[in-house]
View (cartoon, rainbow, N blue to C red):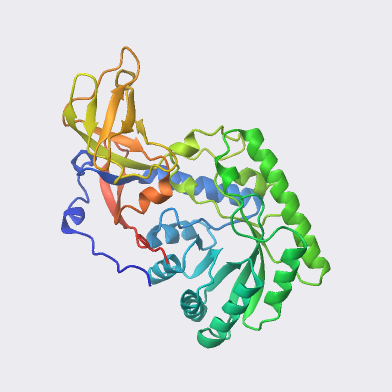
Length: 393
């Protein structure tokens, strides 16, 4: 089951309406203006290319943000875990796709119960499969705990990630046929996501990788249709490659999620000219707690941001305060001046970090602090609960 929702502490409630400089540190702060511009740009992009967008909620883990994007035109959410789906359903989200394999019977029984619950609300649940045994187990769980409304099933093909999924082609045909044999399972299409391509540095590399993805998905779709089964949807894509899937004529849905906040890793990639100009919207607010001749120390260590995609960068600096963040352990970060003319910050100075990877960074926090009017002069407008924090099962 998803973790119990923590009540918003009084200290955070009282922060609403306060100036941004009064936010205690370290804290995960969302620039609401930048985030909402990202949402609008994504909505406009999807509308222009006539594709659906189903943002991946494993990034923000917040029902409030999922519903906000749905109001802007998003088609529900993606998640990776049953417990994430449960947590977002508890927050009012009713159209959820688990873009991952689930094989343990207790989890499948939870998924079946959730599918029945969402169907009763006029919603739906989808789940990915890549093995005949997984399909049989899902069918058993639906027979025991589901409803006649059933569940959508996406056959996942491995289009280059080298993780889950069957090879494109005949293996996927067999799985689609296996799904169609069960009354409570609906074959809903193909899951075709190439995660590694999202972070290829060059536009040429990403373009080449997704050309192979599109060819594999098109070929597999054709084989399934030739076998007599309609393929309602090909879904996948991410923030780094969405321009290519959107233009492919094969993908009908984009699962990009990081566009909402962006992070330092995406900023290091060469930008596709046709991609919307997404902005950084998630920052770690930190404070300098010690100063020395050659370095300063801030209070945001690795417990405040994920480092799997590299260390954070320091944002919103004037040229004379160009700084490099370096590893100093769980609770501290080292700050070094970049360049002969750069100065170190003073004791107590507030700084803003752009995390290397937004998804696992968000998962470190119970709440995000939403600021309106910019990070330098804005005020706290809302507290955003990370509903699915720690939802790992």
